Image 1 (cartoon, rainbow, N blue to C red):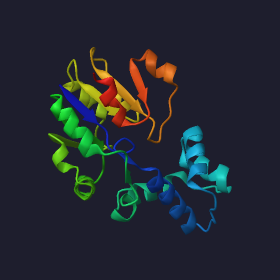
Image 2: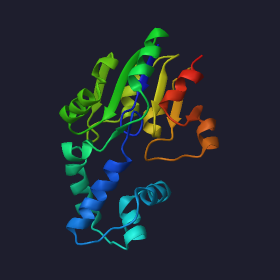
Image 3: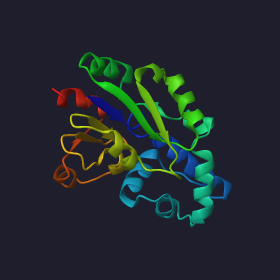
Length: 207
């Protein structure tokens, strides 16, 4: 059996990175942005799109395509990746999963694989995985990759439906609340997905 982990928003808290990228862009465009990251979180979970968050919090009207290009260029730079914070003690969780007989795979959507490996090395996580798979979001989808790999008894852990949704029966799927997405728990339960606070809670679920 194997546990497939998402990275951004699951093993690391990326809220500060996304917040700072948006504020950096708005600063370049001449906007003065006060407020707190908690306000950004609240509106991001409610509105989903950063341009709507910017308009709501700072009355900033931005060119969506221009912002998305800036975000794409900056989001995976070392300057902003260093803002990511570990969620829990993954090395400890990984050791316990191995003791229970699970394999551990990281599946991440990243445009710059080298930057992911650099971040994993900084966190000391590389040796935790049996396999690290990186999918370019421009050329592939996690769901397609998972469909070819996942088997009955495997475990999926992530913060988006693409991380955890599968038509394969007998798969344990867990949605974590640490990422940039929020879904109704009843909606997820109807899809056979269990909602947990963060990935560390899977140890109590996998008994």
